[in-house]
Length: 425
Image (tube, rainbow, N blue to C red; front, side):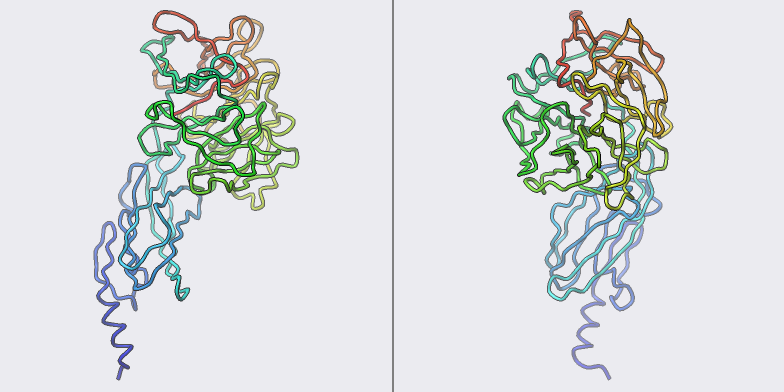
């Protein structure tokens, strides 16, 4: 004979309904505890487009704290909140940095705030990666004036220019393919002169940048570069250097950046995130205190061991490196750099993969470069600043073809070597 309390518990729990993609059933908690989490938007048979939304409903009678994890670090998440009262639903945005289809496990852990009871649910998700090539580049004119972007103007050389900021205001810029404010446009990341904050802006902001407070972790201000993305399952963040260490900053951790890595030889610039060694795991690429190109792997548990390409970037103006990109379509990224001889080079994990330009006739300034499909032909080029004479924007493709980028009226486009040019979207 059941006690009254036990009977009441069975009545309550048997009334819970678990609704998940590809199945819907009334399941009592005594047979399937995960039914107390209503999980919508997962399924091993369906391939979802990113960013993809998963909805969680708290079907318990308690207030819970929710944690979402990707054990294989294939996915990154953005939660509208992480605590839920009984009956409340929240949306989780899921994305991946991969360009191909990604399949992996997502683990949902719900902890009752009142009594500490845990519910853990593991579900499979298949997500199509971002296949679109980046098509915009970010740069400034003399001394950081006019933060501008360029996009293809319809020919191999002609580009369209958009001005995001007009004042002489920019100290450093960063590579970004991240839409932080979910308005369908990637945000440019930069640092203002005389400011310890990092700012985000896109063409929809009408000249009004949004600040991310770095707190006491002040960004490096000379010969540096930032990047954005998700690394090792983190939220969408800005990665930057402070006092030789690498930090991640996002809107939920503003004023409290998270330390990502402490290289024994320091760090100068963070170039980007990508799978450069073909192991299906993204690496975080940076430049150390001797301008050597290095990278952090997620399994570096203390972030104190690092791999190296054993190749150094040139750094007379700024650090000559760009965000990694897939130049061949095989799913493995290469890192574009300008080396000490002003050559544009593509790097892999063990060093040089390909030299695109070099010699005395075509030289690049030792400053940041951008991997972008700037002529909209379906392949990635490296956009760089010409070294010597007029410091204009040029592009080079993997066949070594160099193009001077111009406006619709044929004017060359000057760019500031101390800030360089980076990819934005």
